[in-house]
Length: 351
Ligand SMILES: Cc1cc2nc3c(=O)[nH]c(=O)nc-3n(C[C@H](O)[C@H](O)[C@H](O)COP(=O)(O)OP(=O)(O)OC[C@H]3O[C@@H](n4cnc5c(N)ncnc54)[C@H](O)[C@@H]3O)c2cc1C
Figure 1: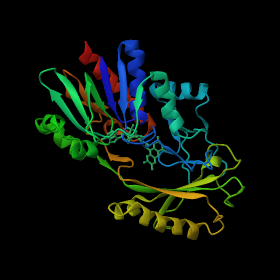
Figure 2 (figure 1 turned 90 degrees about the vertical axis):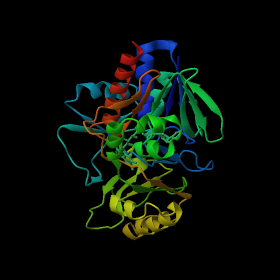
Figure 3 (figure 1 turned 60 degrees about the vertical axis):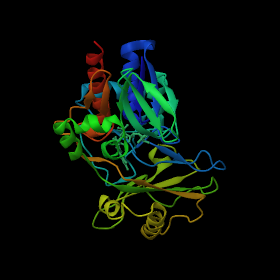
Figure 4 (figure 1 turned 180 degrees about the vertical axis):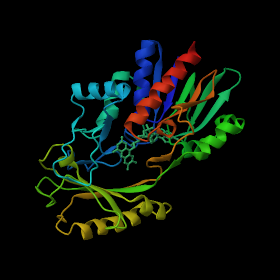
């Protein structure tokens, strides 16, 4: 059976892993992502070829485990045992909230290594730079036909969509739209899902720069102190690695993100760069490159009512929406829960 997963983020990687565990080699798992690299909102962006070891986590920064959650704990333990994550060192951090019930972990090889780890175990066929534009149900074959931006067509016997829900509603054409349109309750609930908007900026330094002259690894900026910056990290220090090449990542406040949501990311990025140097005048100016990213759909602020983990849009053949928009929390633990619920639904439909 050819199962297509749309999106190569953490939800897709976890779903792939759980499907592989459940069904073994009989499923062909095929992933399509419009991006050039895996990770989605758990992405690690690298400097250019001249400085290939310099990177920043542009989206998610660290993984937080709830001590009392026995279900998600197993996934964390696996990542710890295989040295994909390790404890986040909080000694030199500012504004990181302490919570006795939670433990924070960092990914020494960058946050996208977590996504890669699960995909590798799931043995998927990975197709990057493949933008899905249409999902149609072919009544003669009772299979889905996926159309890509370059007009290529691919068949699927089941489809799991993990892209942010507003993009499902506005960007995916074909019979998926009609399937949603025919289910008023689902349509209404999908439209309630909301994400915040943020911008991220990465500053990549050459190996010759050995200090960024800031005393912290992570700094949450007080909202009353700055109308643009919310989060800053010296990425190597955050990943417990203090040697060059160094890099700095900055995230804006949600308010700043929302104000500039329709603006050009390069123009806004230059404003953010100026704000960074204003806030950190001691920061070296000799960076190698600077990259800007607009997270139009950043973190879930309102999830699908009742957060069922996923929604089955069509049962035979299966068409399922999943990801953090359906989870109790818009983070790694939420994506684990969504993946578990998705695979449970998939198994029920496959009976
Ligand atoms: C700035 C920021 C900070 C965050 N901080 C944290 C944190 O510290 N800890 C934490 O746990 N979580 C954090 N999060 C949230 C976390 O990143 C998300 O909950 C998680 O990554 C969502 O994963 P996902 O797989 O559900 O979706 P995504 O990662 O969004 O994956 C969806 C994928 O679908 C692809 N796609 C979209 N449309 C199409 C299409 N038409 N065709 C093909 N592919 C398509 C996208 O390219 C993307 O790769 C943060 C998020 C952001 C943005």
